Amino acid sequence: MSRVTILTPSFPRYNSDYHGIFIKSLCDELVKHVNLEVLAPRTKTLKPTSLPYPVKRFPYMPSKRMEYIAEATMKNAPRIILAALPAYLASAYIHTVSVNSDLIHTHLAIPLGFLAAHNPRKTPQLITCHGSDITYPLEKPYYRAFTRKTLRKADRIATVSEYIKRLAIKQGAEPQKTETIYLGVDVDRFKPSKKSTSITIGTLGRLVPEKRIDTILYAAKMLQEKIDFTLRIGGDGPDQSRLMRLSNKLQINTEFTGRVIDPVAFHQSLDVFVLASSREGLSISLQEAMACGVKSVAVKAHSTREIIEEGVNGYLFNPDSQGKMVEKIQQAINNREMALKARETIIQRFNSKKATEKYLELYNELGIFFKR
Image (tube, rainbow, N blue to C red):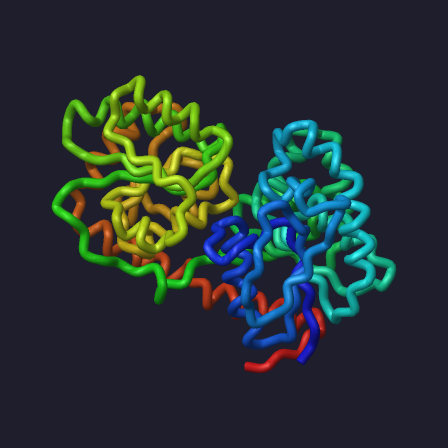
């Protein structure tokens, strides 16, 4: 079998970590077919794990205790973290060029995709674009040259949604080399379970401003005048304290779970999942919830329209329209058939096994031999 290196800035740091879990899930399937290794940054909270493939962690500071970059997203990162970026990039490049593989499969076009694209070994390059690596350069023009060069030099490009594919092509990706592969979820793991008679509405994700959890809280304030329910917010992040204060101010029955160790159990506890962020490539949490037969209400955006058909397998609301969010949540609660339609959608179109098959097809086109 051929050797494949997965180069990623995000990979679980310990056994129960949800950070980069979607990349790990893909690796868990791919390793059944190719000799696979992962190259990811070392980080402060890193702990020993046991996996069926090697995970090499590149250091970039004298001590692990000083390595924070992989602890959070680079967007809007504080200066103390950005100060380590030159050392991070230098170490990543040195370790990337030392890789002796038949293919380098990089997640995110920038920054690691840019480094991989300049590998003097001329190793074939496959880049998966997840969303922020393509949308961020549209906000910050000085990143566009890096993104364009990365996309131009890649042998093949996979995007997590048709929306991201269109933006990638707009920024320089060649259409004939670019393909959408929905990462999907493991439908054998994420499946429905019996729920209690009380109503639980929730969301799961990193608690940062761009997730717009505050809009869910304001909508919950309006909704609690109509029905009794519990609001469950899963995940942690820098915005958690502010959101907890807002919840107390609004006097909402809210449960902040903190870091979610078992996402399956979390989703199975919900009656309605709400996604307020419009900046997702294609939300994995939304797909997980739907796979668990959870009725979902999401902001109307390019990516969510690829998965939700209004009134059939979920509901969509316009951004910043809390009244519409409340209305759609009420409709979802009363729609019993929607749960079955939601899971059926994931099984048919967003199944992780199908994603693995499509990636193996790309590997084959790039000359990679694998076992069936």
